[in-house]
Length: 170
Image 1 (tube, helix red, strand yellow):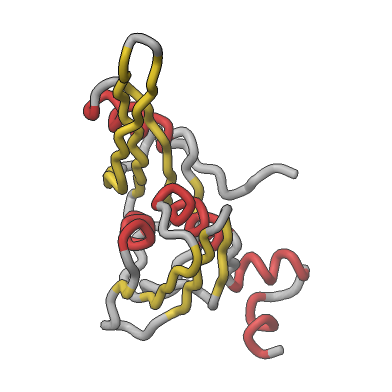
Image 2 (cartoon, one colour):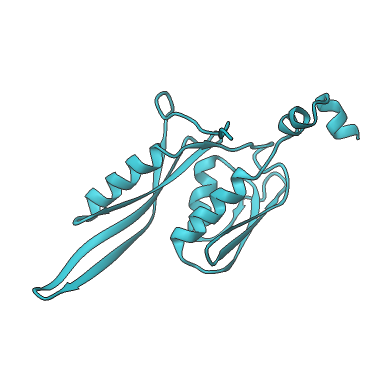
């Protein structure tokens, strides 16, 4: 099955957000070797988001590698009046996230890694809660999984092969 939500980064104005940097230590016979792992989220704040992981010996190199990886994994997310179309749960590893639409003016009520993803997408009003693991890597992946499961009225009408008005009116 082809993912219809895949997007190319060629003509988009993407903004990158650094979610987390971790120092990784490898112990060998000759001593300790330090390297860095950075998880980066990029988005155009108009419904497109992607995340990437970069690993390198220096922080700046890890961030640039993560940004390049994120630009290769962009997906389109449906946004409805600044919020999400419906409630959604996402899971990845030990992390579980819950997203709920909010009225205009609520803001992004989310913590840490989830906030970076939601703001990169361009969602301005949402209620979010994370349960389980607080690992930023898994939280970012769980949030993107939840966002990819969202469906707008046009997509539902296309799937059911009916008019968009029939989706709302039953």
